[in-house]
Amino acid sequence: MEAVKIVLPEEEIPKVWYNILSDLPVPLDPPLHPATKQPIGPDDLAPLFPRELILQEVSRERWIEIPKPVRDIYRLWRPTPLYRARRLEETLKTPAHIYYKYEGVSPAGSHKPNTAVAQAFFNKIEGTRRLTTETGAGQWGSALAMACRLFDLECTVYMVRVSYQQKPYRRVIMETWGAEVLSSPSDRTRAGRSILETDPDSPGSLGIAISEAVEDAATHDDTKYSLGSVLNHVLLHQTVIGLEAKRQMEIVGEAPDVVIACCGGGSNLAGLSFPFLADKFKGSKIRVVAVEPAACPTLTKGKYLYDFGDTAATTPLIKMYTLGHGFIPPGIHAGGLRYHGDAPTICALYHHGYLEAVAYHQNPVFEAAVLFARTEGIVPAPESAHAIRKAIDEAIEAREAGEKRVILFNLSGHGHFDLKAYEEYLGGKLKDFTYPEEEINRAMADLATLQP
Ligand SMILES: Cc1ncc(COP(=O)(O)O)c(C=O)c1O
Image 1 (tube, rainbow, N blue to C red):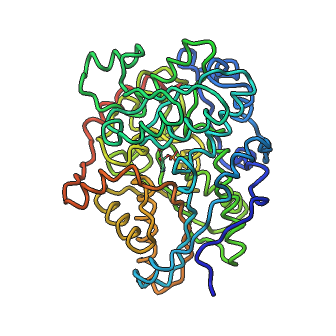
Image 2 (image 1 turned 60 degrees about the vertical axis):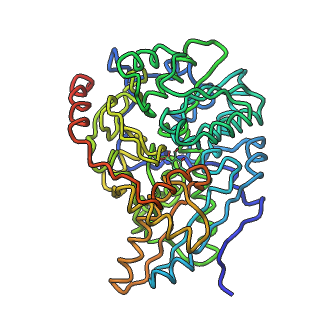
């Protein structure tokens, strides 16, 4: 009988993370201090992050050991299963083989705990008392809330207002793990108050929530900040996904022709694809595709420039594809994809042709999500459904070309807290936002002065 799910024993949880910086065949421009336009050093990051995470951020070691307490917590849900989507394949009548790595089995419901647990651990051993963070969809905030509880840290989550309203139960699950959750923009920080003064009805954005969480950490000595995506060390921690997936593909004796993931800041894409990209750097023909929302099309329509990581312009300048830090994306349901930039490594790889990117509107994404739920059973997170859309399109292309194609995508989370979005879609009420060209042009106008 051919396998539907490929499950590894706990002993096969990776013992090391894969650091792509050791193999990167393209230049990576350093983060810059906004005032001096000089590269920042570890000391500049010390108020926000513990030493070990700063070292990981700049490390060029290929393999970085996963500490035992982190692996012990990973055992609660890792290794995650790899599925062959046989029912979806049959429905699509495609000769393609579709595989998905399912990260929604984590207690928080997504891939985010892979890094949340690691970050909480390194903070704990260096004496941090409290962590602050932002959350878009609520998945990241949930992951950090859980990780903080497991290491006995306090946790403050700035939750983007539109998600706070759309997903009240995400707030409750974070509170159940003991976190404090604030709707962002909030009146707790200067950054939040200044946005509320000019726009009391602001839907919020990841960029604004980051500004608030960074300010909160920077103004309290016992508090550090934790980011759910974008930074090198976050992407590093996520490589457990791809390392396991590679082993699972070996077991079934197949190798993916194309690896697909949605891209908000780039961490689940990096997590699945970086271990496979290591082979591409050595000549393998594998394709890697980032999928983003048409309402926030960072890679497909942004420019490769230095920009701030947050809306209030408080972070270092990062070289990335950006839509402008002042751009506030429309309130699509894939809240985790509403970010104006992307991880610098993802951007550099895309710029140099190692990655492809595609953007979809939310209605075709939900159409794919519902087809997936009705064939494979799992109700996906709206973010992950972007990857499903592309996987289905690849499978249809393979059918039309009459070729076998091995497709692997990341099902980064489940959508059990996103049912309002499904209700709107099923009721025919889900809106597709046209590309907000004018707003993006306005946000991009400021960037010229930020370049070195
Ligand atoms: C389920 C899920 N997938 C994907 C993402 C996008 O983030 P990233 O691109 O860092 O994986 C998010 C972000 O919140 C998420 O919740």
